[in-house]
Image (cartoon, rainbow, N blue to C red; front, side, top):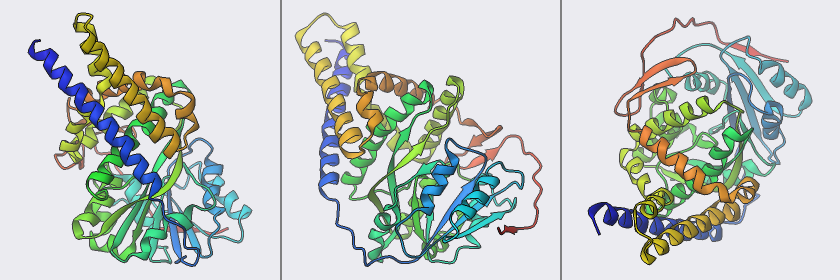
Amino acid sequence: MNTLHLLLLLLCAASICFYCYAIFAARIFINSQHPIDNNYHPPITILKPICGLDTNTYENLASFCRQDYQDYQIVFSFRSEEDPGIPIVKQIIIDFPERDIKLIQCDRVIGTNLKISNLANAVVFAKHDILVLADSDIRVGSDYLQRIIQPFQDEKVGVVTCLYRSIPQGWTTLIEAVSQTTEFNAGVLVSNYIEGGIKYAFGATIVIRKQVLSAIGGFEAVADYLADDFQLGYLPFQTGYKVILSDYIVEHELKETSLADAIKQKIRWARCIRVSRFWGYLGLIFTYGIFFSSLLLAISSNSKITWIIFVSTWTTRLIMGWVVGVMLTQDSIARKYLLMIPLCDLFGFIIWCCGFLGNTIEWRGQKFQLSRDGKLLPMLVKSLSVKHLKSIDI
């Protein structure tokens, strides 16, 4: 047995261990869900930064207006007064007159991440001390607020975040949807269990106290980061607050895109994760057992041990996909397309390798250089005008 064969065997064994650990962590997470205290319902402000239209924009935004929750406010924030999402929000305000909804528009810029500038403009209008940040392509059920707020009964909790399942639009986003629920979520669960909690957050949902946001320096502290959601969890953790992974799973509406754009997006996020969490990114090598077992089988003679490793790796990976994607995440896409997991993993391994190549990304038509700590450094600065803050009332 040569060195390459031995290395592949070790990588396959490590991958099997990771898959088994993810299954164990998922089962623990499922069994540790706590009952809901309906008497705990502090007032909440939801901040919704919007730029353009997503798939099913109205339904996504309206789902936040249909909450079974006593006291909450929603602030919809736009940068451009010509944004096509403004008429939709105006219609939502008409359709939900009982809700406390504010629509504001301001193109004030505080950093290279324009979404964070949008949030910074919105928080000025926040009435309540607990903020919920959620991307515009997220859809939730009516029990969303009541469930995600529960961990805040512990004063040491500074941030709560959520896993999500993705809804694909077209075949180019199907791979992303399956990978999200069966591979990405598995890694989060393993990290959550090993470390006794996570140290970062996801844009699908970030619940944060105003005092915690102030403690880290406000939105200005993350205004130059591409992975702003990661930093909004990591910085509070560094300050001494707990970051809790909620048991609520939100839905993420993927936008139909071309294969080239989908690949660019995946590489962009891969490079961003690499500079934000290098050792965590490097550790992803242990999640690609499908690739390593296939390569081992391809370069080996038809030996019994090779076939045992190959079958064991693929079987354990599919079981992990079922437990995490179907049992925990309750994802109908993962259930239907479970056998796509090997293809998704092979694609993911290629993207992972590309993530090591270079520090430049393209985002919203502009090229950036990623610094060592994940900041966005513009390579071509466009002129940005700053207008007065506007509150648009219906």
